[in-house]
Length: 78
Length: 131
Image (cartoon, rainbow over all chains, first blue to last red; front, side):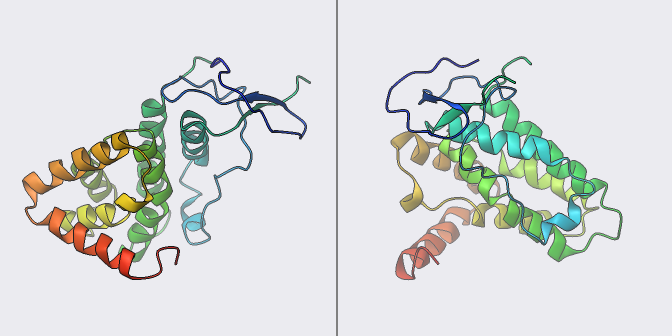
């Protein structure tokens, strides 16, 4: 898991706010969540989704937001 | 799960789009290809934000092959370029440099690409940028 660095965690939802991640840090997406999500596809492209595995696309979008220093949230352990 | 670099994840995202085009159940048509490229705009913005200087020519070639060369490669290249974030959307010197690297590679093959992009970007400044 990428180390949490920086400060000003602001997340008050169900997860644990970790603060900001430095750009270039590898991201363990199995544990990472960000809010708000940015993995919505347009309706037109949803016609393709039977062939597209949307997970790699949403993984990249989430990872890039994390790498760009946006808020990272780790969900609470079950 | 082993942590992955953002570049690896970008490549996997592009692979997913290409696979989606390849396995489209019906007959591919140009507007669908353009719609996918427009959808990739977010990914291009994310890539530039993370300083990933991806290869537009290679990506266009892969999309062309996946769509059975329905759209000329040059048109795919310029469609991808049109989805890149404009300089006024960028925040750091590194991101400017990344865009320059991406465009330079295209300019070497398609001279005039940069001038065309600059006209487009100037038009964005002239109009309501948020629109």
